[in-house]
View 1 (tube, rainbow, N blue to C red):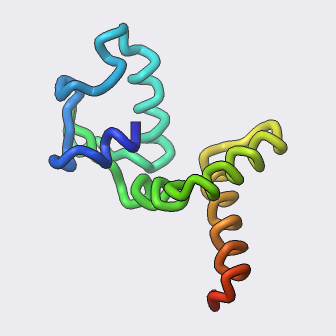
View 2: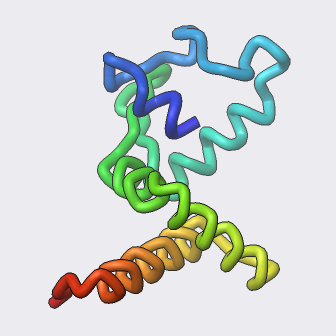
View 3: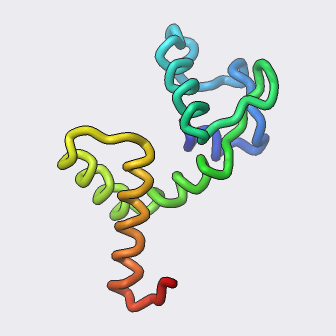
Length: 107
């Protein structure tokens, strides 16, 4: 969902803009959209309008690298139970580890 939002030219979208999955019932999609809003990844500036927030963009940027995303998924799987915050923290940790491995200074 976040990737679809990011890929759009118009940063504000409406559910009738061809949001994927809505044509097949949509209840599950609407539930996930509500969760993304609760997590702070999506904002709803008006009744039927939505946009991705800074936190949503930041999360995508953290997991954009295939290696980081794979490590993040594997780490979450090993935990057995996780939240989006944990996924974000894991991704940040793997990015920091990669920076250290590359000899890049981090404050």
